[in-house]
Length: 398
Image (cartoon, rainbow, N blue to C red; front, side, top):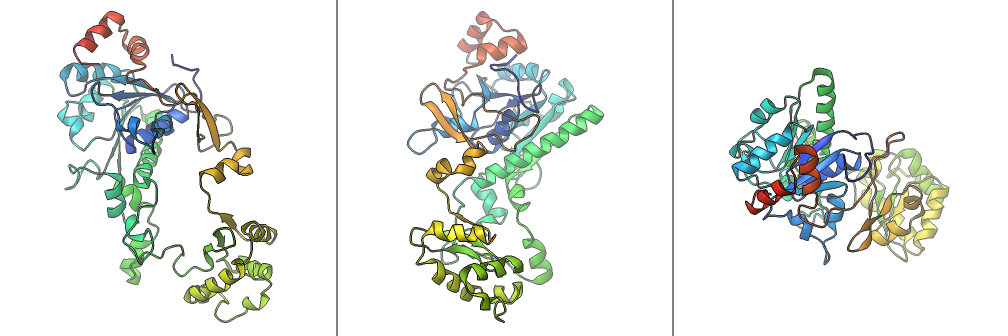
């Protein structure tokens, strides 16, 4: 049935992935990681740009397309649309992240596809959702992060709003799309009916914005950028050492007391400026400077060892080399190596979350060739032979 033996909690489920870049494909990656048969569809003349994205060498594709089968199909023409409809008959999920209205323009609306397969679950990831005045606008993750409120809070207050270093808006929308798909699957198990999962990037970001809305409406407070500190929460910051900054989080009263003991400054526990959460928040800069003066002349590992001894949350600020060398990452197989036809082996993050009885697995990295699984997929699902596929290829359909 598949390129490799089926695995994971979602084995036996089939996904047609029509999206590109990040927001749709990351949802597909999550489903594929846990065993769903994800068939990624690319236009014959327009490969997913992720095949070329990366820092010097395009390696991101190896992660976001892992465990997927890749086929080509021209959805802009009726012949390709008709083939997709045939495949929908044998599909559980159809995943797309085009601009709202694109699928309808191609005659592939949910209403049309539902006639073919009433159990179909259609996962739709977009910048603004499928409804509302902005729905037809082009939407990228960065804009969703801005509208959802995250960009305003990211970075140093002395500088313009910053990105967080990764495409978090896309990934959040994809993760919520995956969550919604599994909810829809549960509903289908009970009723036999499919439905639409509508995941908008800006709303995925908004869903993670904690209490910023009621804080404004009820308390009249608008959160702003605070850099490396939590507003009114102290001590919780990055502190300097002889060989780099470390993070210490001791804002809870009991943990703050342990930090003071570790520092050899027990008098700070009863200092009126720091006696409770509210007081420390009001005097955040003062307590941070006291801690920084203590950490600055020490080596990072010495401070971290002391924090562990006294039960104070702390840690290094990891980069890729730190992750690869860390014993905890190694013990939990957080990073794995996957065979690759070009790079021999590609290290990447492992499947997450971890399930005790049906763990997912990375069987293969993203396929190298465009349409690499055309023969397998079209042959096994639709019964197309080599002659049929050759004709479709010559016509520009696949």
